[in-house]
Image (tube, rainbow, N blue to C red):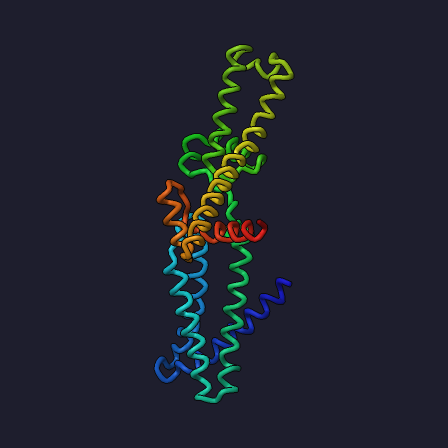
Length: 265
């Protein structure tokens, strides 16, 4: 599959390169090749940069907008090379569209791999913590991986509980000998503590979601009785006025959840 995708990208790139280069010859002469190379490399660089910033939680949409401006430019240049002939315009435009489609497919695949397309992407342990305390950062990262903890703050909470329990065992059985002197039941409880804390962290989130859905249902029911049709933003405004906190990214989820539940009722 990978060779086929790479081959399609190469074919699209070569077709677009030749067309844009020939179109730029009257103005750039022997340097006409820099126009298609600059456009294609610009698209690659901007999309890669946008992906990197999104991964580091510093997303800047301008990069993606500019990349798509380059995409529009290369499609327009390829279409212009047909000199108004419809069939030729379609054939010329197909090459850059193929190239860009492959790039977007690869970009989406990378986003899926690193978890950018879902809400459960694991937060990274900050670099400063790795530098100041590498060993404890390694154990924290390991615990987050083992117990599927995605939030860094939640991982810190688990680490705090673990260290507090270890300190208690050290006080009773000695700083170094607690691993052997502590009863087996207490050592097992220490291992299971992380699992219990990790799994119990889902309940408050679920309860808050349930409360949010019930509040939204009540608002919608009152609006229907008054003959008022609410938008998602209106619903969010009324929820916030009642003291609920909801991010704009969750509005679609809330609208879907309320709609499904209302239909089920």
